[in-house]
Length: 507
Image (cartoon, rainbow, N blue to C red; front, side, top):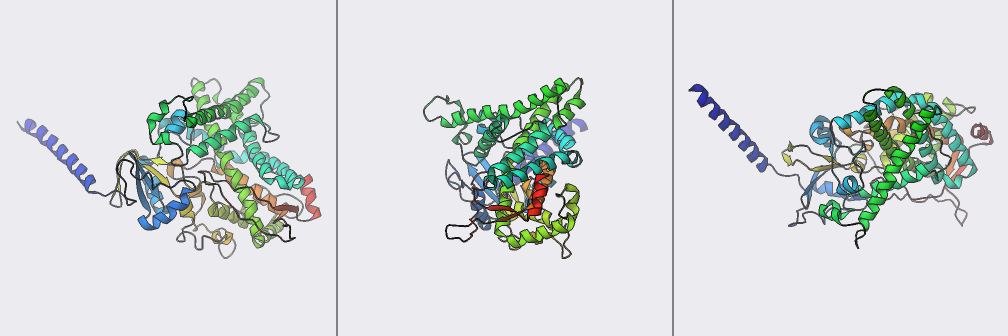
């Protein structure tokens, strides 16, 4: 009798608890944001083109958590480091998934990339590859590769400084292609480079909010590519081909070299050696191919513009350039180029790197996260399936984090004694993503950027070019309004600091 009473009572208790939970959620408000219109919601309120600069003033009106509803899709914009840490780190099980994009995932076929992969066991397997072969200690084994390519980069800059943008593109892809695949790249016309740059350019367009209507009206995916007005589908299918060629081509070229016994020291070689004849070797190979393809694509698209921005910043701030060169002269001396072993003694160069990435982040909006379940935060209801986007640009230009954010001040990252200040918010904690989704390729990127910047400053002076009136003027820095923001081409003068520096370039 007691048992027959207990079971219904328990069921009633569960029902009441679920009802109360549902009612509580209904009583919670969604985060503040523009008032949605019937049917289309906030479609007209969602900014396009450099949307981060438009979300930024909106956050002053609506706060650090803004809510938009476009048709049936909830979007949350995060404008605070504190909120980002609470959600992406402390509640990572809820906020670590990725948004499923019809254009990118279904039509372009990018459902394999580690960067965009859905959170779960398969994602963790891919992340393990990153940590094992591109972790902080693993990448130091390729210091020689970095130094070799930076040295060749300096030679190209000296020979044809007017082609700085192209030389920088070459160096980044050459380093990544050599370290990851053991493939030598002579110039940017290399077939793998052409495919990769077309692929990342396509991804860049697709990730811009509102770029393709098919992401709002998914039924449009069924329109044939030949149909009038279906140019979006032709574009996406073309990028799909570029993507698979960029992912597969260099990997299987490296594998063929390994099989033939002609492979170089590279990540693919190390992976294939470790896989050997294991029972799951086929799965491990696929996971490695996909992970390395992601690393190559992401590295090409972010490191290149960061270095190009660096040239503009040095041209605009000669006093900072001279201070950096003085530290290099003191630590490195005139007879050699800097190495990564000098890094601890060159805090001002590190501070410049941090300030370059803070002042002009090339990923001003982090990749969208997706909520796995309903959540409550600060009294707000955040629905399951919400797209959550951190406004990195706003965080890096928030005076609460960085006083006078409009000024380029490397010293903001230093203590009075000139050493790095660990209490200052590290820009890379935002520019490389958040929580479990932080980019594991950051170690190789950081080493490459630091060594390149230090070497350039040690050898060259970067100044404005002379105009027709014989006067020098620093051109404005214009950034593209895309998800990975690139600087528009500009001119600058790149000259040896002294005749003695030519020996360092020619060595």
